[in-house]
Image (cartoon, rainbow, N blue to C red):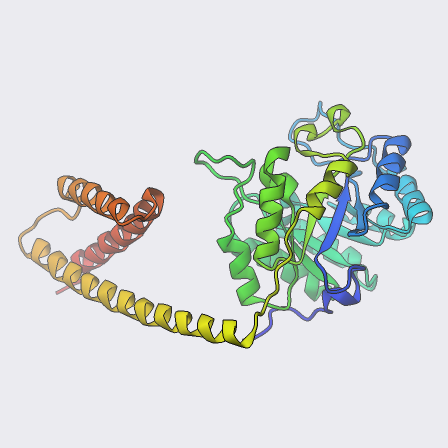
Length: 363
């Protein structure tokens, strides 16, 4: 498999060894007292190695708190000096980069709103040239892997070799218990395409509420993601931004201690049995592909038959009947309703497109 990025291994620049890294700190730096109190408590948690705090906050409405700005850089430097924690903040333009580098910030990240603009990413990349500072890139607001990878590539091509992605979930138009739906298939695909690229999960922005944090954090660990970024505030109820998703250092310590870290590889006996089961999956997958190919062949025949008889492609009565019957059959076999619906929708969309292609084909 080809590597996408020319980067250094994460354990060479992130101070957490081979364990998942933990980055913690408030959504926003609000005062020197708040920053220092939070940092001192976080420094007592062995897994926490990096302190995060937003200084320049990209807010939707200008009347809301937009961060303390440059003043907060001195507070972060004091955190590093007094606690030994590495420090990181978000940058959204070249000016932020220059100020962060000058102050001695250890690493920076690009936020979801910045990532969607290639011009902004390119300008930030230019400002980072020659700095050797680690850079983390959050996913864009919308579920678009290409845009995410494009931002990572721009930063990497600017000479940044200490690079990581941050998965913070995606905006989702359907009902979801999450502020930003995790859509795990997207970061998993990113790791498949670029196995050398570390992916850190931001449960705070995915969940948007504290009661889901432990579940998402455990899922991230189970999926072999490379770390967690969790928003932590000494007094969350008084936070000026995102108070509903921040936890105290004490709660963070409890959350981390409750995580189960599983081995990536088991015993020889386990691996042998696993390979046997995987072999069965491979056979079934091939059968599925063969069956789908047979189905699409019949769809092509139907398309030609409709064309010859000048019949419209979409037959809603037939589709509604199929949809209802197949979903019911799937549920009787123990399959989740939503899964069956998604599967049928994908198959139906491809079937319609193939019939359209048949209709448009010149004889």
